[in-house]
Every structure is written in C-alpha cells, then in structure tokens.
Length: 405
Image (cartoon, rainbow, N blue to C red; front, top):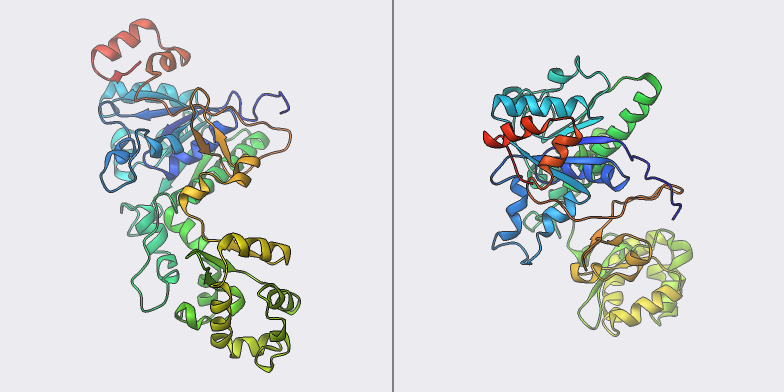
C-alpha cells in the first residue's frame, strides 16, 4: 500500500445505466476512487437488481449479481420521466466529469439524455455511450444482451461448439458484458487523457457487437483475408493432440496447450511414462503428430485415465508443461492464487469476497471495496453534495421524483 489517494479521487461519475456492461465501466472508475453515482428509477430500480431472485439462477441470500457490478457506488433514485426529474439530472450532469448510459437511443431522446443535450452546456463532460449494435445503421435502435449481440452475432457462439455436429453453446451471465465494460472504461480513460491535454470532453461509443467481434478478431480476420474456417471436429479427432482436452482417472478434465512441441514433446512423453513415443515413427516431428493425431490422442487418453487430476498437476508442473485444469466455478471462488494476487478481494464490513477489476497500477492503490448501494440509499446526501437546498430536496421527495435515503 502506498497510502496515496486513489488515482480517480475527486472524479464525479454519473452511472445512468442498467444490467452489466455499462455499469461495470463505472465500477472500475470507482475501484480507483471515483465518486460514482448510481441513478435508478424509483420502485424497481435497475432490473439487474432482481435477477438473483429468479428460480433458474444460482440461489443465494445475497444479491450477488448486483454486488459484483455495482460495488463502491452511491445510489440515488430519480424519476427521469418527470420534468423536474430531468432538471435535477441535468444539474447532476453539469457537475460531473463522466456520464455513462446504455439506455436505448429513443429513450435518451425522450428524457433529454443524449450527448447533444449536454455537449454545448458541458464541454468538459465525457459521455460514455453503450449500445448493443452501435449507433448508426438499420439496427441502431435494436435491443440486445451479451448472449445475443456479443456471443451469438460475433461468431463466438458457433466457434465454441464441442464440435460442428453439436448445438451452439450457451454463454454464462456477464461473459460478454464484462469485457465490453472494460472497452467502455478504456474509452473513457482515453477521453480523460485527451481532456487533460485539450480541456475538452467528448462522446465515447462502444457496443456489444464491437466487443464481440474484437474478441473473435483472429478468425474474423482470417475470413476477411479469404480463409475458409473449418468446422470444429470432435475432440477425439482434434488436429493437434498437444492442444486438446483430456479426462483424468477421477473424472476431471484439463487441457494441454503446448506451443513449442519440438522442445516439449519429449517432456510430455516422459511425464506420461512413455519416453519411447519420442522415437515412434508416427510421432517424430510436428507434421507426423498432426498426421497421426487420432492415434496419439488415444494413447494420451489411456495414459491420463490412469491417474487423478492432482497427480497430473504435479507431474505436468514438474515437467514445465503448459496446461489448464477445467475448474468448476466453486473452485475458482476458492482459488488460492487468485486470493494471493488480489483477484479476489474482501468487501469491507462483510464476510464476503468479490472479483476485482482485472488490472492494477503500481503506485496507485485501489479504493477499499464497499457493498453495492440499496435503491436510492444516498439520495439526500448526493443532492446536498451537488448543491440542492433542503427546500428543493423536500419538494422533490414530496412529488415522488426522488426517493430513498
């Protein structure tokens, strides 16, 4: 710990966004000390608050989806459908450094929350805009989630089938949202740097589709360059035995990822107790091992079935080979390396841990992690901090425009 203020201390951020991707950009800013104000409608609030109560999701007494994406924020509940709510919001935005939203474009127009509604009045404002499919073209107003716009539309869903004969693979909650949120954060940080140099804010735009295509950029680039993407074969017919998944004797899986087979193939043969394979004419060099991959996979299947995952972890680590266990989510939540490196961090005032944002900056400590706010938990305090008088606050409450603490 450096005992210095977090990097973004004093930065004011308005998070007028829902669900996952856009709010997580604000969460990263909060991790580095920004004062992030979570704006929600009175009543239900952000729909993401209620996902944990659905019967099809993992059950917990804690609101874990909302906690993961809205920690370290203060909350205010404002009815933006009312004229006085829109005026109050404009006063908040006028004192903010960053405004983040993923509201549908037509909704922004109705509520006066477009970039052009603020740009002239607040030229230093950085406006972070997040959409499903971008802000131009025929599908600009189309709604989408990471499952549809990031995972399915980008080609990723098709590419990660177990093999080409199997149905498309479903993603898990937030799989596309969290990296998309990091893209929005990166754009905002870039805009903050530009503002330091020029004094001007600006609009940052990104989308689920853009982030999904960036994630699948290697294969998309191949297609752009005229390559044909071959269908994925079944595991038993994989093209490279040294880049395949294997089952251990205790019914666990791991994946080999040997990038330098010339050097690592003898070490793998020794680790499985079959050093004679190195001189087997079917497996002499990389071309031979590709041509005879199915036979080599059968040999490795038989070998890896003889020992437990724990034994293979020791043997493969001792041999200096690159591999990864196929961990369960429960195992990742107890991952010792993740705790040692601060990937898992405690939430102050609770006995809970949470997943940290995925980078650190030497010499700049992150803020301690606090729990996500209740709906409108800090409404009064936020309005006072932004210069609202007690009479104005009382009037907003009396009209039901502002609710909460």
